[in-house]
Structure formats: structure tokens, C-alpha cells
Image (cartoon, rainbow, N blue to C red; front, side, top):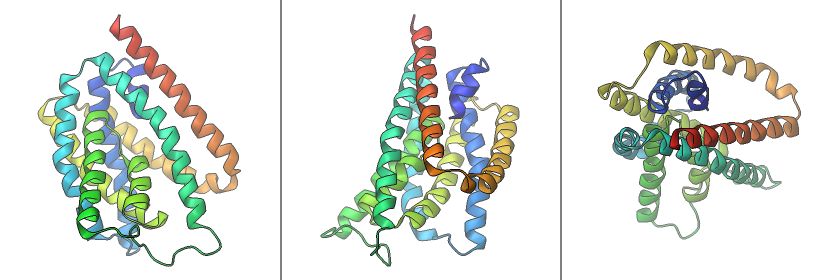
Length: 238
């Protein structure tokens, strides 16, 4: 969601995407370090998704440099709209996980073969890496539902794993964009530090707010950002 903000501050879409990757890296480090300290960091799960993401993130960086500014913004706006669907999907999966008889451990889909699970990990991590390089996003909103649907992971495990994968994808994306000269470090560090502060504030106050209010506000923000992004894309295509 940092890309529309940077575009509004008159940075080019490509610089906005690259700088957003740096901010995502900074903010994701905090969550993963906390998980590691608490013993929730599963290296095998993270690497299973993160290694494919290393490859596809560079493809995303390459495509971002080849796309026009308008096409990049149209794609980002579409991603915001897809997020609305994925958030609803994730909420539905959470309700299933919190049903009276939730599963006691993560289990893959029925009849899933080892080959299927391997392909599912490659595909899930690959999508996350591609989006990180192309749009400067963490990819957690896409990874978590896919991890739950395809890999049979519980919601908490999926979130903890996705945070570790986001670090890998963000590092790869930042390095790729740095080689291309697209990263603006000063704005990126400021936004990253702001994200860390915001995360601490939200952790303290969000639990006190009604879930319906939070969902309505977040969905409304996504719609507003999508409209603004499409408008900026249309202006650049004229």
C-alpha cells in the first residue's frame, strides 16, 4: 500500500515499487525476529517457500523495469482489488479453523501427494516472489490463503511462515532493484521506521476496536487506493 503513497508524493511508479520493497523488508524483520525468539520460526517451511521466491522476484524486478508506468499502476490497482477477495477468503478459512472442532495440527489436503505439496510450495513461493519484485509488496495476503488451502497449514503457522518468506522476497527484490538503480533509500528507511512504529501502535489499540469496524475501514482503504491507482494509471496513459 506504500506504492500509491509514494506515487502521490510524485515519485515514479518504478521508484515507488523499489522503495516499497525496502520498507517491507524493514517492517517484516521485526515480526520474524519476534517469532524466532519465541521459537515459532520454522526454517524448513520458510526455505521451502522462500527459495522459489528468490528466482521469481528477479523476474518481477525485470518485468517492472520493462513495463510502462501506466501498466505498472494498472497492475498494482488490480492487485489491490484481488486483495479484497483474498481477505474474504482468509476470513472464511479463519472461521473454519476456529470452529468447535478445529484441527489439532497442520495437515495437507486429503489425497495430496508429496509431488503436489512440492509443486504447491514452489507455486506459492514463486507467486510471492514475483509480486515482491514487480509491485513491491510482501505477498503475505496471497501466501497465507494459499498455504492454508494447498499446504493444509493452520492460520497461525501460515502467518508465521509468511513473515519469514517476506524477508527473503524483500531482500531479493531490494537487491534486484538496487542493481537497476531504482531504490530510494532515504524515503524507504523513513517509511520502514514509520511502519515499525505503526505496527506497535496497532498491536496495542486494534484489539480494542470492533472487528467489523476494522474490516470495513481496511476494505474501504483498499478500494480508495485502487481507485486512486487506476486514476494515476489512466493519467499516465494519455
